[in-house]
Image 1 (cartoon, rainbow, N blue to C red):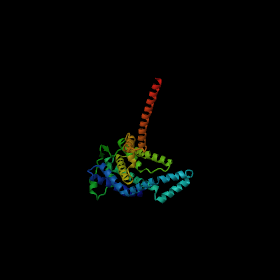
Image 2: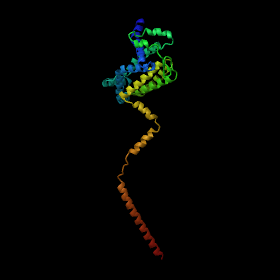
Image 3: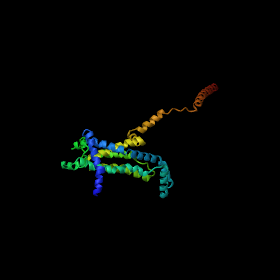
Image 4: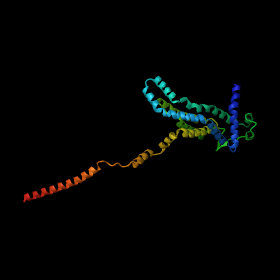
Length: 303
């Protein structure tokens, strides 16, 4: 265990602590900006993996109609449906598990960042002695930045925030889940997607009430960067559709606009109707003349 702890400290904790403190010195002694800058760097390093994940999801979306066809064709034979589905994935060069890669990679980062924040922003001043063991002596900017100012926008980054940050974490993670959700091939997968869409934001929002606010800042910044990357790679349709649903009366407005833009069609019977109208007018006049003649003849007979 001591060997594992030493490797963990050397590969994860040490670089994170020194990187955060160095960014703190660069960003005008602001630890909140240091965490945001650290998040952008981490997401930049993970960019190839994130882009690959986004392309895999886009390919999965293109295969969605064929997956639904397989599920309908082999609805009574689940084993055959699974075989045909995997065959389709192999033919298209799609790996469904590849979409989960960035999430698994970020787990060690979350744990390391949590431990690093606790060491950088200790509750007792005496804990700064333990922090000095992790600082690199060949970085004078790092050693001169201690102690760290723990406030950012009125928040104490060393303690949990029970209201604001959990809501921001939940909303940003919900939007991220909406952007990266894989298309459902059947009703069972659709139910699973719906459960994950709400379970992950609620779970991380609950975690935020117990973790330092600095870790919540990382989650929020990471979700925002991930949404931007996903939008540029696969499109903004999931979020744009939500915006369209929120706007009141948008459906009626679109229908009215389409109706106004549609040109009036001339009926082919217009000319015939006009002729019939003219003929009808003559017929009415002829009938009126006939009626007058009959009336006069009737008067002559009475005389």
